[in-house]
Length: 40
Image (spheres, rainbow, N blue to C red):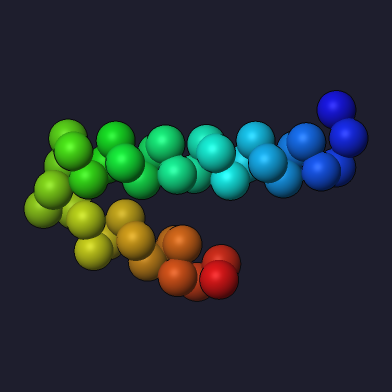
């Protein structure tokens, strides 16, 4: 895999994970969002 493909995969995986967390554990929404904010 090229670096660009890895980055795309990580972004897709993170988005999918955040969506799953929001749907399955809504009460943890803010907690789950903190790592994303820290990365950005």
